[in-house]
Image: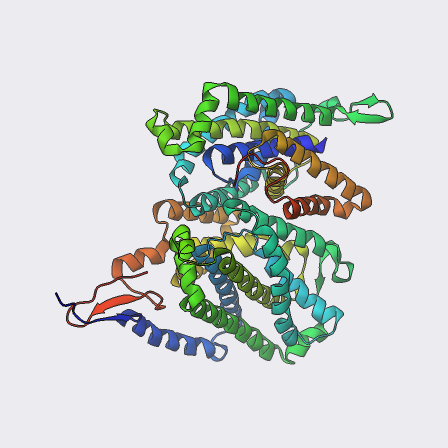
Length: 345
Length: 276
């Protein structure tokens, strides 16, 4: 019996099409400051920041199985570090952004060592405790306004760029840049050796560990990378807001609840899911935000429904229906002679 | 004495986790929901809050049974993600529902003279309400311990906790048992919520930190050990009081730090009974 020649490939026609489409969209977005109005630019910037947070949360929850309800710890940390570095030490905001990432990483190492002792669901609440600790500590820092918070003075804001429109453009590019960077890091991380290990852990932890994958180490690396990037995103968020207070910086709703909804509705455990989820979230918000707390209740109900009825989210539904992928992660075996066999995920 | 209240927060959480392996993120919000239900009962019937507990407990138990059979049973399984996210969604719904129904104004249950009464015990005096809270916690934990280890219902709880499928094969209806466990847990939660409402003012947003206190008490005491949970609650309460004496701003921080220190030196808690 002779086997037909087989080749293993990652790319499919759909993802090659999406690559072209993605490049076009990226070009359009880079040109946004020249075609979009001031309000649109701000909205787009916010969208990119949320997209980054959602993608990062998804990397932790969807791939590493680390469900955190305390990512606001790093968003707030980033904000406060930025304010401390610029206000108290006089460092240029853009330089500070780079330092912030390393500090976030340095903070995440001992935190991870500690809360990794909690298993599964208890880990989730442990992350929340950490965020609370950060919030309470930040409220004790008198030079940064204590419990009531503080603002960046005009001199620092002007040091980003002198004119208002240049400043808005810089902020926009920062947001777009971090979103592209986060997507890039996650994509290449998942395609790397460690990413393969991570996917194996996602699919079956027991089997993965019996194949010699160091689960603790892999999860640890994911947690620390996520923390560092989340810290930078947090710093950009508060550089844009110009004002910080403990309650805003460490808000569970703003930086974790919304993000979780985006990922769950879009489709957890895929790169595409958070992107769709974030778009949906912003559309919903445009139309329903006036409802206030009822809007949040609707969001909660939608998330529960999705989790119960379609746990793979909107993207999971599309993927199973049309066999499409935007980011080529899975390997497919292809018979050179005849039709393609999909061997996805 | 504050520890008694925390132990009550924790007892419900511990029960839910113990029987169903479910970590209920909405637990804090359910405590606050109980306090608001109590408020409505007091306002409409004119009962004093202590008597109103007798009305709120069955209400919460019913809600618990309905919640478990209607939604939460569908999430039980090997995967941790669905129960966490569903209870997280519930938490947001309850919190905003309360906000919509009762507004964000802080409320308080007025229990009358018992709030300020105190007994002198030698050089120290103990408030009547804290004493009552602590005594309630001891009685409830003793009661739960009795139910768990001395009754048929407790045997059923322990059976489904050990192995759901085999328990089912042995003729137990696990969906029903889980419903009962949730009902019992929320009955305890109702008492905790009412005592919370009598002790301090509350608003719809305080649920999260109540969840955290309860959770910390469970972990400090060790998973699956109800008396340990009481000890954990007391340790947490004492740590917060010491912190508050140093600086009012350090009250909550001291509690969290005590938790983190214990987590660092005794990861499975002080008196563990089962592995996580």
